[in-house]
Image: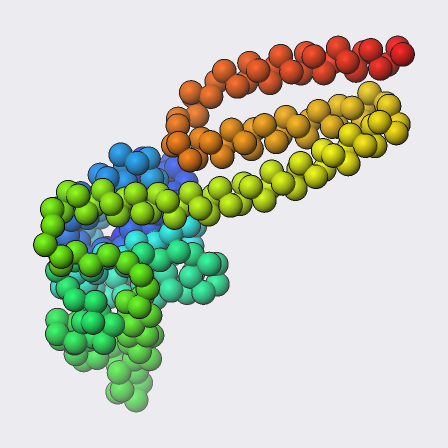
Amino acid sequence: MAAASSSSSNNGSQERHEVFLSFRGEDTRKTFTSHLHAAFKRFDIKTYIDYNLERGDEISGTLLRAIEDAKLSVIVFSKNFASSRWCLEEVKKIIECKKTRGQMVLPIFYNVDPSIVRYQTGSFATAFARHEERYRDSDNRPSKKIQKWRDALSEAATYSGWDCSVDRLESEMVEEIAMDVLNKLNRVFVGDLDKEIARYDQLAKHQLQYFQGSPHPLHYQNYRDTLTLIRKLQMEKQQRLLRIPTNMYSHADDLNKNNTNIDNMWSNVFRFS
């Protein structure tokens, strides 16, 4: 099973998510996955998770788009994970997004050995035997999508992740996993913001040089607008790193307004100089 935004209901007004959480509901919905989801909430990690118990035969377009929109997908592999066609389709889509969109993938092995997932042995072999009986091509051979499911599982199981079979408290483990996810997201977001800040910083330098050579109020205003944008990006960077609610940055708006008043004063000075 997979995901609806953790910060909203299923009413279409979902907040944009960062993480897609794939799991087998019958195995972990009320245990490990619920604890992990709660830890994500504590770290303000916006997660797409679906507790809907009714599933059709085809995976929904909404779910596929949710996977595409995520920066990182967490896959909670469990004993009966492979028995769900939905779960297998999710993994296939997640691997596709990793290859085409650079999406990060974090596998978690809960009460199942990673080798069972990678090589489809044990309970996974039993599940695939049933799939091969159910899904047949026109020539009565197992459907080609079954091999795609196998390939996706094999690849996902090779990624660095978390093995929950170790003897330790689950409460400690979910907190560490949540922190791991948060750090991975921060590296992506902060890296993107740093590139954008550097780009606008270079633009501001050129604008200042142009203004110094041609001191026109419009040139000065363009320069100040770029500096304001850089400040906003820097604040967004700190907000992401600290996970501070946006409303706590309301004082920054007042600061920007004051800066705007100062800018207008200097513009008038240059206009009449």
